[in-house]
Length: 392
Image (cartoon, rainbow, N blue to C red; front, side, top):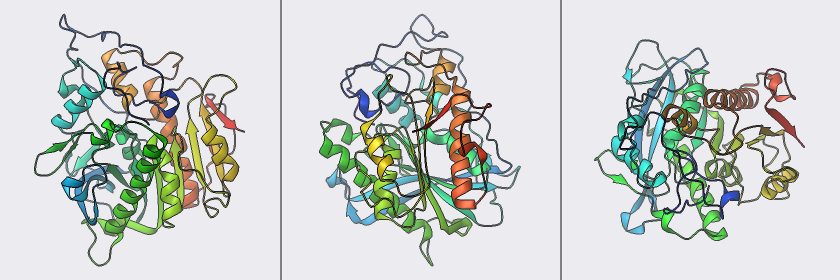
């Protein structure tokens, strides 16, 4: 959730540290099991887990420009610009395979996270997804979920979650927060870098990042739901009365200031993000909130979570995933395993299992809150998911 020092080795490929790790340098990476003599992995092909829902997944990338807001990190760039991946329920057999991310953005991410990087760019940019470009949309209207990634991470870290939610009958807007991640590629071919990464971390900066993301999300909602000229050609698929937000790390924490500022967001979910903008004593107006995190040391909890929990005034759940780490709730471990790279000490949840658990509980939450479908796994511990602990 915070800036990772460029001089520190990453604990695992693409891993963004949580706020609790501010003062901790990550251990050096071991060489990938598939590495050549030069240290670069060979013959590695990454495939994301298949979505669990009945719908095929379409994807379209849109470019949004906020003419009313100057970019907060690079004012000389002019208006705030965002790239958003729109996922939508599609007709089977239409469209062509969607790439994971652009080669330039993948290279910048690898170089930022792995000093001395030798991982071939195409291992990331060429990862297999389950979405299709130019796919024909299904008929109907679907709830909209906005997804926001962790600080320093591109939007693609939540691809597996976006595809799964879409397959279950949601439209998903996966937002890149420009200059807050390793690289965002724009339609003219240029790729921005992480200007915000060079700002010394402080409480003030973290609050500013949260508030900026809330403005980004509200602007995206404005453009997607605008009448009569929405920014996306398939905006008719969106049910404007059923909107939720979820995110990882800073992206999950940003659900709080977003909900405080924007009543259109009816439900929020935070995947392992320290919440620097607190929920006020008056709560979130009764709106539901889900918190899913990795375990800390025995007897410890993130104080921003305990404070948030006390102030939440609607339906709420706080779940801990035993054996997980900060990156478990993203695509990152899928790459770790394919490259033979170690996960942080104490990690026992396999990559596919981490993706499965994240998908199950996030989808169950939005099914309940936006579709009114009861999901018993949210009622308490279940034998099929022994990793999940309910708090307090």
